[in-house]
Length: 225
Image: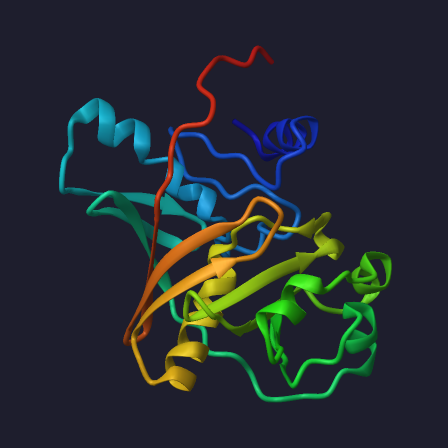
């Protein structure tokens, strides 16, 4: 299925991205860079695992980013991502203003990382999305240390056509090494505070990170094109 058809399906269904089982392809305006981004990809193996009866095994897909392995982790499915530590600390007054609150720390990169003091600050953010979308950056991750988990986050990418993503794998490729260093631990429990919300169990493993989550089929059917 061509990328244009994927893009049309995504827009018609008002989804951040769509997947199909015959081949892993990340579809979304900011995903053509080759960096897989969505935890929704965890749902792809549900069907082959179930239909093939592959209990306790793993499945490796081919993606633009290279091999993408999904394995069972108890009742969860886990994905293996690259670890991407945040870039250098850098001020960005325009970004502070677009986010609506100045973070206590800000790190530049393909996806900027803004660190706040509390869960409440992260939850209360109401970014100026038009202003944020005009800035020369791919996306911004906002995060804080958690209360009932190790850390929380949100992910904004209006320049890519996505105001806020529900649960974002590529963001956690950056969050896991950051919080592992800050908290002095390699196993982390995370929550993404989008409207839908998401919960991840993470682990830093050298130059790789593992993210596990509980997923369930939402809709199965046929689309006539």
